Each structure stands twice: as structure tokens, then as C-alpha cells.
Image 1 (cartoon, rainbow, N blue to C red):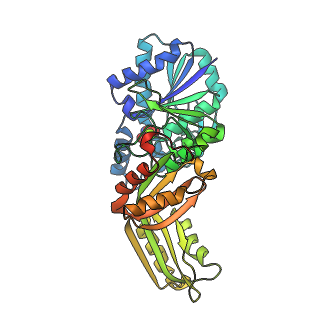
Image 2 (image 1 turned 90 degrees about the horizontal axis):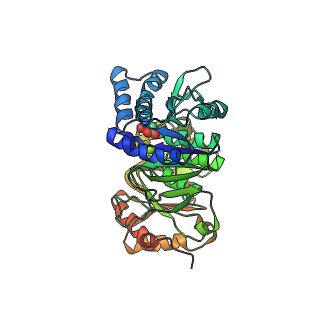
Length: 410
Ligand code: ASP
Ligand code: MG
């Protein structure tokens, strides 16, 4: 039995007309004799509507009840789509998370998939040719409905593809694939043909919304090839897959940015063992994600500690650290909300030097000041003034000639 997994996002199922287009995509592999697993999101806007309903009813909605309600968005789109297919004479049924079942832990609102009963799905596939599976939802060991976090249908689809050993998981969306950068910011952005899991993870963690980050982690872990493509055309999209040699010969694959950043500096902390732990442990306890951290060289046994956090966490961070001012022993706390991160990403950086300096030169030529720098094996990130984000993205995109196709190593 050959199984094809296809996932369609909210804009692809938003009305009857779009669902009819989705049906054409689904009927193709079906007519070629494959069994098809169709994973659907809620109609676009529906999840937001349901979430705000919950917030209207309760100041702090019970997470389990919220999941029970929010998961109905996917229930509706799946049932409607199954009706359309049945009308075409297809032997199919809708399958909700608890019916599959997709087992998760009990972290309501952000549950993690723990197991998928592939045997039960295989049995259903003996009986039906197409299963229309609700994305985003699962069920706990004691049968409570859970949801997987925003964008979670991507993860449902990849997990199903992994469990059923499908060759590829097709993610259909309203854009033609993954781009070298945000096309809204840079009109020269180009669709990427192939991208490595690690690069996609970096792009997604910087806010490229085309795939939920967890779905990429899943795909990498279980080696599922993901094909991101448009519902509304037949064009090839972007293949997200294992790294290979051709990818390594490309220096930079994409430019990502994150405007949701703030910079905090603790001026003149003591330069002695334990101080970093004193600063960052209380933030970790509050689940504040600290990203870039720079400690300046010590002068007279004192140093400045600068780091970045999501903008939404500024108040909590300042409150937390001000309470510990005496304990940590810093002189002053400063914050800057007008900063953003711009990154160049590429597995090719692992083996090639000069990528960072080329980026710094390009930014300097535009008079863009770099406030902080951090690097990983496959990423160079610069913190800059917020107002230069667009210019920096365009400048770096051009510097690495991403508009012209991948830049090969010299
Ligand atoms: N409907 C959910 C959301 O809007 C899940 C998804 O679409 O992937 O986040
Ligand atoms: Mg999505």
C-alpha cells in the first residue's frame, strides 16, 4: 500500500471554492492508486475566533476546556471536506485526533505528540481510500482533547507521515514555498528549491511562519522529506530534507529577521564565578527566552552584561532583575526596545570562511551599526537598530546574491 500525506492550511480550506481546489490536489494521488491521508487546518481565522471567544467567557480560560473548544475548528473543516469527497464517490471518512488516535502529553495548548497508533490507521486505510485527519489536535492518555500550539497541523502531518512511513509529506499553503527572505520586505526574494532541516529550523525560529518549528524538528528526527508548496498552482515548491553536498556548496541560503526583540544591559556587575547564573536562572524560571548574551571584558573586576529577550518579556525581566539588584550587585539596568535581529543562514558556512566578514562589510557600507553579534555553525546574527531592519535584509540579500540563485563557494 503506497501512502501519500498531504496537509492543507487554513487559507486553503477557507471556503467551498478553495476546498474544491484542494479536492483536485487530493484526487490526483488517489486516482493514481495511492491511499491518501489529508490533514486539514481550521478555516482561516477560525482558530483566532475560537480563542477570543474563550477569552470573552473567562479571564483565564481553563486550558483543557479551551483545547476541547478550539479543536472544533479542525473538526468542521474535516467533516465538510469529507462530505465533498463522498459526493465524488470516494470511499473516505474524517478522523479526529482521538479517533486516530494521536496521543499527546497533557500540556494543553502546547501538547507534544507522544505516539501515533499506526496500526489503527493502517486498519482504517484497509477500509477507506482517503482519511481526512484533523490537524492540530490529539488526546491524552486519559482521553482529554489537546491541541499542539499555533500552526500545529504541520506537526500533525509530519508525525503522521513518520508513523505511516510515507515517502514525503506535502504541506500545501498559500505561498509557493520557502523564500530566501520575506518577500514582503525584499521584492527580489526567490523561492528556495531545497533546504536542509537545520537551515529551515533556523528560518522558522526567526519567525518564518511557513512551517511550525516543531514540525521541522519532527521531520529531522524521523527523516521525513517535506515538500512545501502552493494549493493554488502546480509549481514545485521547496523540499525540506537532509543536508547533502550540493547544499554545502552554497554559502548562504536565506536571510531571516526578528523585530520582536529587546536588549537589556546590566552595567557593572562583578566579574566573578556565579554572577551569570544569578542573572539568568531567575529569568529561566520565568520561562523567559534569553537569546544573544554578551559579556564585555572585565575592567577593575567589573563587567557589563548585555542580552536580548522577546519584547513582550521586557517588563517581567526588568521587574525580576530589579528585585535582585542588591543580590546580583549591578549598578544600573538599561533597556532598548528599538532593536531587531538579522541573520544570514546557510549550512555552507560550516566549511567556508569569510561569510561573516562579508556580511559585516555589506552592513558597514550602508552605515548600519551592529550592536551585538552572535554566531553558530550555520548562522551569523547581528543585532541592529530596528529602523534599519528592511535595509539590512535587502543589503544582505544582495550581498550574497540571493536574488540570482545560490552563491557557490569561490
Ligand atoms: N488551526 C491552528 C492554528 O491556526 C493550527 C494550524 O492551522 O496549523 O494555529
Ligand atoms: Mg501554518
